[in-house]
Amino acid sequence: MKNFLKLLALALLETGLILALPFLMPRPEAAEPEPAPEAPTEEKEEPEEAPERTIPVLTREGFVTEMPLEDYLFGVVAAEMPARFEPEALKAQAVAARTYALYRAAGDKHGGAVCEDPACCQAWLEEAQLREKWGADYEANAAKLRRAVEDTAGQLLTWDGAPVLAAFHACSGGWTETGENVFGLDLPYLQSVPSMEDPASVRDYETTVTLEAGELLATLAAWDEEAALAASGGPLLTDPVYSPAGRLLRLRLCGVEITGQTLRRLFSLRSTQLTWQRTESGGLSFTVTGYGHGAGMSQYGAQAMALKGEGYEEILAHFYPGTTLERMGNEQ
Ligand SMILES: [Zn+2]
Image 1 (cartoon, rainbow, N blue to C red):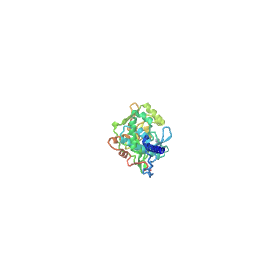
Image 2 (image 1 turned 90 degrees about the vertical axis):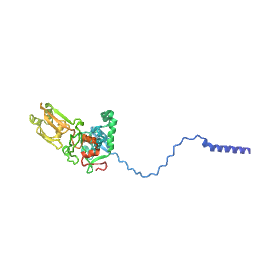
Image 3 (image 1 turned 180 degrees about the horizontal axis):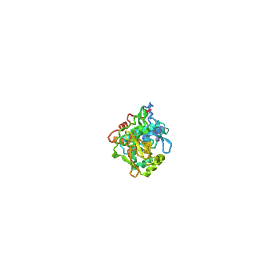
Image 4 (image 1 turned 90 degrees about the horizontal axis):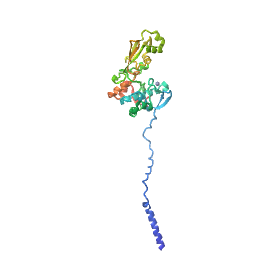
């Protein structure tokens, strides 16, 4: 009996201990809550993200590379328009550049690629070049230009549902030129419209190019030796024909008819809005207004409109009259 009681006491003690064990044991750290069971899968309402649009770019090295369109546009706006310009002018530039790239992608030139030559398609600079160009201002400028691209993401100008030839140039010198007179393309949205550039705020609004007699002779001989010889001593530039916008369309050089654009290239002039006079020493002096071919959007004109409080939609509607501003994916 004594032994039984002893056993019972031991058993009770053990049971008590066992019961008390959880309270005596150190409390474990708060455990991670059990992951909630996955909610029953429901059809998600959000539309699937469209795959990022890329654009074929013909590089200076002569090969074609596919670039994400919006990344490419940052490099175009940075190369084509001063970063100090107003945000609305930069946004207009972003839409024009996007439209231009999509126009090229839909066409045959360069096999549907857009090139980096500003004299042909549109300029583009990569990050390393922009860091060198902007120096300490890189971060601030890059943020400002990225915003212009992002704020207009996917927006382009169309005519009859297709991207337009959204040509642009630096400074029109008062009036833009028609697409017919610049590219030989009579397009309803590339007509001559006034541009409000402020001559005082445009560097080199008017420039002068003077060739001394020897330099003039060498240039003419390189162009057409026979014509230059035949005309030596005779009239040099005759029969000029100007467009209503004030640009030289054609004239005779040493008796040979050439276009104003050919004359511009021959003497490295900034535009075809020009006059000339012979110098006393037998040379030739050109006076040139503005910069660029003159068709489509004038960048300084866009800046002047933005400074007056106009938005990028108004700027684009002014320089590309009759076009529709719409989102990518709706165009044909
Ligand atoms: Zn090109």
